[in-house]
Image 1: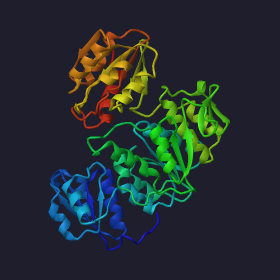
Image 2: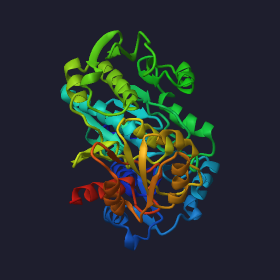
Image 3: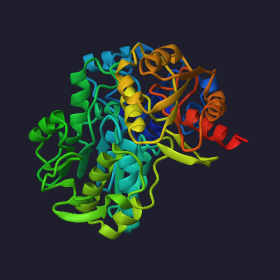
Image 4: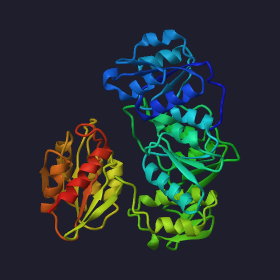
Length: 450
């Protein structure tokens, strides 16, 4: 860890706890800052806050009082999930108090370079693929970000010969100042998180900021199949490497004659890749590009792609029972993700879907339902999904209370050769704390089948 001095004796407010807030507060305390933590959860129900209190850090819990800004803070480190329309954030910006996210703090202390991955879909799979490819070639990678390990905690232990492979959300990227990845990846860009961002342009700009500090010594890997991303690449100062699943680019990463190619070199045959789904080719191409730029051998890339079956909760193969294959795609929290999951299979599908109602219809999902023979719905969006299913001509549609009950019902409606797929097209928060909890319940229900 770089022993930076810029926070010594500086008054810093860490807004919001969870993993990133706890890590940021502890780190700033070590760096000599006068840290105050503010979290909405009452202290009596807040073990994280209690732990920080024991370290000698000031903790204010139960609310986000605007009066905190009267204490003369010089910096706010914000939990990414707290929107910028929060009164404390609005007040801070009005007073010209800088607001960053914990990712910026991680970059400032890190001895290791970063490979940063962002985009609407595919971030976690791409991040994991790159990590596995680097690890297979003894490149000593570390993994961080939304994938479950807090960036500043990873950066504390990283050495110069490590590489931090980090998944980055638009929420995190809105709070960077100097963050500069050696390699940045933009997987794809679709409308998302518009309940957080005030406009599509704000969301686009947040994603584009992954390259804003890059120079000619860095690389930006971009999906050539999306004109919006090509426009972002045109403005970048980094060396741009394009990838495409649809065009033989001749340079960058692309498909030719059944091979994954990079800079004109054959890297791995498509038939040797076990990760299902055409959409995963985007993830594979961008991961291959990042790995080759990092000096990874074709042998290591082949080893990963010929054995890697997917990230948990992201089109994860659970197993087979009586000729039925079960896949957990609980991370599919929007229509686009579910559409891509459905396109991954040629076999008839029993689709398990439903969840939080964000006010949208499911009309755009209808064309993707052509291979769905039955649908099991649950959650707040059950009625809307059933309407989409009927319009798609699905004959068997059944509503149940939850995912646990959906699995045996799906099994009853299935036949040998069918795929039973949990791909909800919705967030989980109406019934489950996280998509991971929802996916774990699906996995348990599959294992319980007699």
